Amino acid sequence: MPMYNDEEGEIAVRAARATIEAFVRGERMPEIAFPASFDRPAGAFTTINTYPEKMLRGCIGYPGPYFPLKESIVRSAQEATRDPRFYPLGEEELDRVVVEVSILTSPRLIEVKRPKEYFERIKIGRDGLVVQNGVNRGLLLPQVPVDEKWDIETFLNYSCLKAGLRSGCWKDRKTKIFSFTAEVFEEEKPRGPVHRKEL
Image (cartoon, rainbow, N blue to C red; front, top):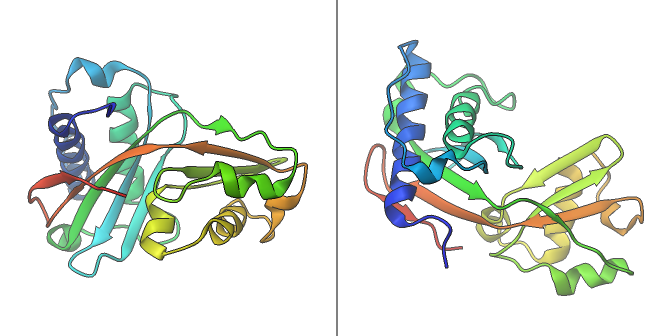
């Protein structure tokens, strides 16, 4: 059963879009009527993609339930416009981007005795990964390996790189791998219909 229905998913994306537009234009944040279910703490990521190319333009979020979902969405939407990997999103781009919101379950440690067991425990299209070793930590959403057509080993290797570690760090016993799932909702076109993204 989904955690959030399609109507709630649309509210999440509309809220992220409204937040992005107000933030980029320097306007007052809009009043958003969130349902009570958004008061529960939950992690969320906002992704901004170019349209129609669907190239990444910004993606920031919170992997854990640090804030109520409604706050996670607003915070991540604001920060995605200033993703340090890109130049800040400009007002002239607002008509040429689409917004995607991923609502996350809490990451859980994958306990294995041997690194090869990860191939049995991780499923492409279901799991996102968090890699942690010491102070280094990195996350990749479950839609990333699907979009990039990666196998599990490639997914693990890129998750290591995202954490600022060497490729193959998942074989190190000191490295911890966490998995989570996400419900993803996206705009079909700028300010257009919102649908659930099937991974």
